[in-house]
Amino acid sequence: MNKMKKVRTLFSLDRKTVLLLLEAFLLLGWARILISIPFSKVAPGLGAPMEETGTEHPSGVRKAVLMNVHDAIQTMSRHTFWESKCLVRAIAAAKMLERRRFESTLYLGTAKDESGRMIAHAWLRSGSFYITGAAGMERYTIAGKFAKYVRN
Image 1 (tube, rainbow, N blue to C red):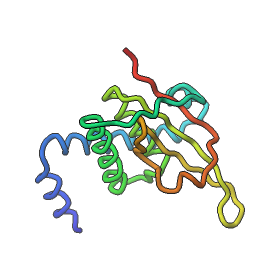
Image 2: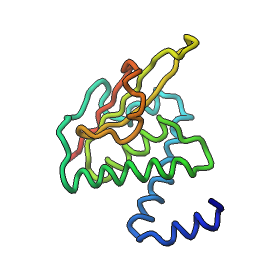
Image 3: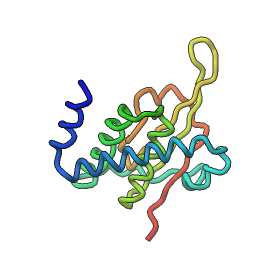
């Protein structure tokens, strides 16, 4: 798909969708900058360490919001000028959910690849719904988790 066609497609979307995609794009950039900072400085902003939020099943409007955030992050991470892999996606999605007053848990996992080297993965869950990183998460042992609770 050429660039002009992509631009035309973007402008054919409704305003709410365009704003959601723009928010995802900006937060992916912000998250990319965050991961260049030492993790010890970033970790306190990720949530309560080694805690998890509830796993209730989302329904109706809540599930639609979670799907919209999932779709926006997935779509825009393919169109960034920088690398937007699992941790960047999880941090950006967590921020989007926090803005919407949704609780979430960010997981960090480790495993060994076929050649025995250590590999890492990050994923984000809200309720029972996985927003990012669900593909392959079962291969990883959870090394850390951060619960982002809704503040009243």
